[in-house]
Image 1 (cartoon, rainbow, N blue to C red):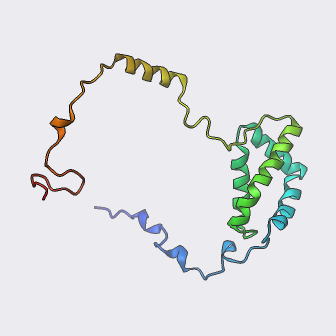
Image 2: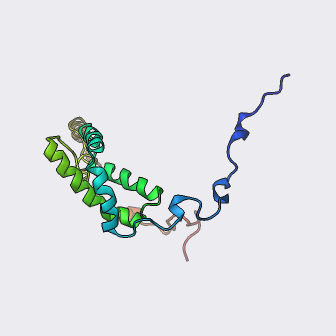
Image 3: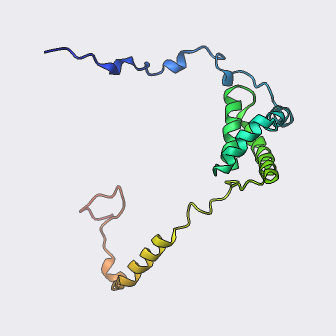
Length: 165
């Protein structure tokens, strides 16, 4: 019988990512831009660069929400050690407004992505099926509260068959 080589042992050892020296990763070092103004002075010229602006508008035209795009850009900045997560959260709305203005100026239809309108709203087919099921169901008979009362304890941790004291 031939011995099969198990490829499962080529994976990293659990916890191996924790063995690097502290400060060797960009996000473990002090941020290069510590204020909102400094971070915006970094981002706005890059966002308004014609080559980047063209690529960004192509992405926006495909229907990607502006908030998702801004969060992706600032997350990259956090991972590179440019600024902290706090600064990223604070500059995201400003970057979204910049992209919104650029999209309007280019005449591109965009979605901001800051509302949850479509996520919780059922579509017409689902709604009509639910209404049809409601019409078909018969009303249940009402039970009186006197029949349901018992001395048996209820709840997740209650013992069965033992009366409460």
